[in-house]
Length: 464
Ligand SMILES: Cc1ncc(COP(=O)(O)O)c(C=O)c1O
Ligand SMILES: N[C@@H](CCOP(=O)(O)O)C(=O)O
Image (cartoon, rainbow, N blue to C red; front, top):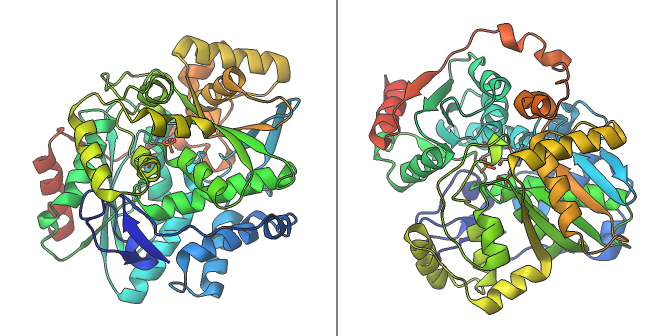
């Protein structure tokens, strides 16, 4: 399997190098040169498979020969054995043909565990084989950070630096990161927002001289292709459980960096009958305005009760735009440059083709809390604020009542007590493995929102 950059001017890579690459050298994101696709018969034959076995079939073509089958199967088994529910990704039913796919059964209670507990194992495997040490720098609005730290904390080949926006993640989210005290884990509370953190991260990939040519820089955010690859699996798993490939499915996806919904788009291209994808945003609604009004215009980032989606510059939208522009890297490079500085209207015909599959909807904080409350009163089911946005958006944009609508349940409500309590409800107790989280010692450094400060910090910690 070959991977190409969305901006067309970086070398083609094989899986192992894509895993270790992060951003492409031309600033683009790697995508497979050609997607594998599965027939309805083949998809049907996977119906009885447990999650990790299904994952093997879907992930294997992307990995090619880079990792032998036994090792890949073992990593997948180990990854998903660590989840708190035997089904790994169980479905909860809210109403007739309306479901929540619970993606928060992993160790850090958000969907990020699906990819990041696997990514940690894949990286360790490849770095051990190459006898290399790597530096990971990650940006988080709250969930990627803890999942990445959990996935890498025991690796002898990785130093991991995670930036989160200072005072802008929930207390549970912060503590899930800052109470991990292994020597290879560094938490940085940046005096800025998530976009600032993500922008510094991307600049680190553009100029890696602070690592003196002695360490490889690796990404754990969804700019890393392996993240998207692992997230494709649960679309198949949920759909198979509800009667695909004989039936079409619709998905509503709480969206920030556009990685999770992009995985759903790929599942469709790989043969899953997906009839609708709903981009559900909070007040940071640039993607909703782009899809519904064809106007890509940056507004200042707003702090909401769904902090993990407080994102303006959404990295993976570039991967969709690449396809929408016939995979023309030069055209896309121009467009991305424009989009970084100007308000942009996309070609109306291309936008119309995007809208054939995608709908969008934005939900403010009050409506998020009302949705949490209403669903709880109707069903006894407690949503986290991100998932509530997905459920509300699904209800507002649904195209067919015959087709199951599956909202991705992206996080556990225990992580977001502000929203749950604003909805007039009680936050549940922390699960068993986190019961003493609030008493654990924390360790983090506060960092100015400054690239040089970040790079100096990293190089001092790595090289002493
Ligand atoms: C709980 C939660 N929901 C939704 C999202 C949005 O997912 P994506 O960034 O893949 O669009 C995130 C973070 O990205 C998240 O942490
Ligand atoms: N919501 C995310 C933001 C980063 O997204 P990613 O999928 O690109 O890692 C978070 O929780 O950190």
